Image (tube, rainbow, N blue to C red; front, side, top):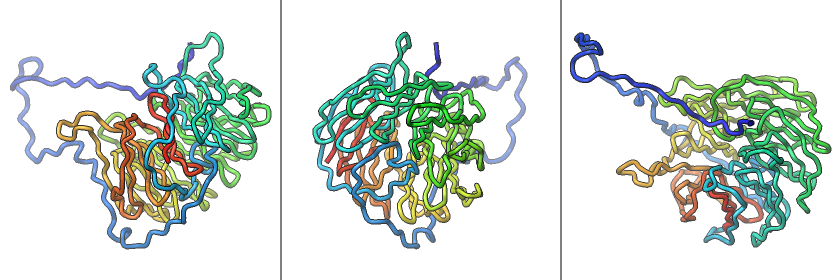
Length: 439
């Protein structure tokens, strides 16, 4: 049976004696003199830079986008400032299929093309819905016969087709109008992240840390790039970014690699692994946040607490900062907005990486007892505010200039995926496989 999910897991055994004796009855050595400092205290708090805060922030005006055809909104993952009016409540909700309640987790971000929404559920079933009212138009299963259900992968749209990379180690081209399968191509391993489509090619990473380039016309594999295979990684993965004749792919090893789109030849590589972290999950070198390309620069975050900007032509590191995250950072104008691994939202200068402001979000549903941990997803810049969604059901809106909260909406749904915006609609898919449109 193919292994279809790769989860972060690990354990440690801590041995401790009781009283004043050692393990075999001998007396312990006297304690060393000096101040005791908790290991976690070495993880320094992130703070805004007053000089960066004093410099002007320039944001582009909101632009109406009719489509959100792939993860990150575009192949280069920098859609800018999107138009979105006031959000008062849900316009419609629809179940897309299997979700966390069925023992799986939907990791694929929905997409919008024309007047339709396309979504993939937790076991790879792809469905089409009307954007205006959520009516189901068609649904098709990608699961091959004699295969157990599998999660992972995602979908993208181009040229009248929906391309689905699945946990069954396949990529399928699906006719967007009818749901009919045009072609099916096997991969070396289950898809790890959402595919990216650009220049009639499909790029997808797999659990064995390979990047495959496929011909969008017939699914033939054009080239494959291999990286270091990791034994442990987070569920899900970064979507490759395509710009300037290169595809930039991120691996669970912490590597960021730029490849020539024509043949997969390596142009440059970098690694965003941070210094030793205090907890197991943060110690993983994984890059799960999709990289962003804009104005000749690549911006990326690692799970282990490192952010960087890299020159796309030379691979030279422009700046590096000690913050990371699991979700794609959002670039608009002169600033980069990010949700950190510590549950903070920040604004950093795109040119220098200097942090303008940091705003902590709620970490627990019960802060006093520290129970009910909250996972956040986002941000998205739309309608003059940053939008984030939480696993406790709250959608929050922040001022991009200061980070202060300007509004909130109680969805009552457990969200762990970033919102998407198109045609004046805010769309979210929750853990249970429920798709909700807000206007």
